[in-house]
Length: 228
Image 1 (cartoon, rainbow, N blue to C red):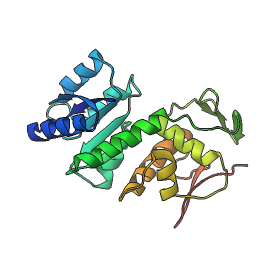
Image 2 (cartoon, rainbow, N blue to C red):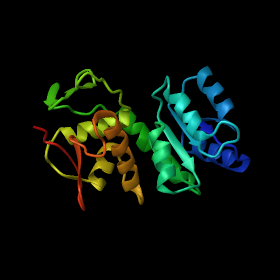
Image 3 (cartoon, one colour):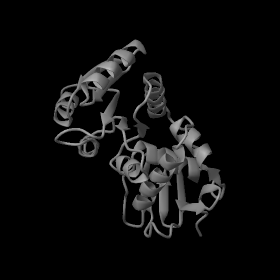
């Protein structure tokens, strides 16, 4: 049984999701605001946070930022807005996945379980230390350095980097990355991949607009280097 912190201000949705997720085997604590959600999170341990974006007072983006300042607990964001900028904003604050409302409880349950499986997965790593130009990847300690910088990556960013860098030069489609990193395939998932690539580039590339490491192959997907 997984423990879920649900932060949702709509009374009807909060009650419906709480009941449905409980029936799917989750232990759910539900709160109506960002402030009460942060208080609940500080008072107890949760396996995952399901976080609405449009909250009164402190919105979901700010709640996500505050959680990520000191916690790696998986976060699934709920949003009624499907525009790319909203998806990217949510992922840039550190969310692991996003779900567009309205959503059926069984779909939300499936997405929660996929994120939890990913969080519990320890990737098989073929080597312990790799050097790609100025980028050094240490797979044992899960640390990287780029010149004199040591960027800190989220778990999802790490899984994406490892998926790409394990096979330098190989082109991965968005669908392949969605399956290997997020563990599922769904309509609109390409935006999830693109947003995570943007975040990863912002952390490891000297010039994210002209990436050396995570390169776009137009019409196909992404590849890692190779970097001379």
